[in-house]
Length: 123
Image 1 (tube, rainbow, N blue to C red):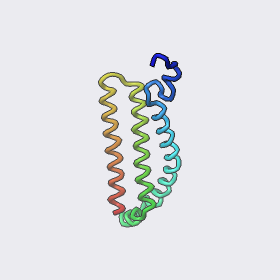
Image 2 (image 1 turned 135 degrees about the horizontal axis):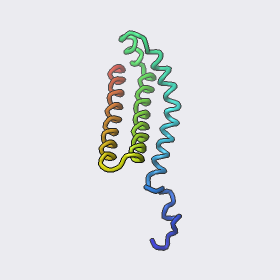
Image 3 (image 1 turned 90 degrees about the vertical axis):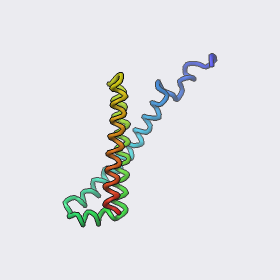
Image 4 (image 1 turned 60 degrees about the vertical axis):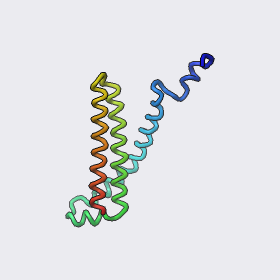
């Protein structure tokens, strides 16, 4: 290990060994959301203002239900990653861990509620 150069030791790792991977996941989810959000807006817009029966019939179709579920999954995972970076950068000590745990629980809860609501309408 003593014969490795500084560059060789740091290649591909970043300062915390996961920064590059985290950045890549954020970029991939951003690109995915660039495609999903317009689809979600247009599919949700068609159901907006309809009666309960019309909305249930609309989300019983596979395309709108799949778009809504993918948007919830990707959006809340992107939210979780972004807020985690924000907390890691600006909060220190005990509150860092507490806020990351709370934010993770909030993200997964909101994701589960959204997916449950769409599944409930679709099935």
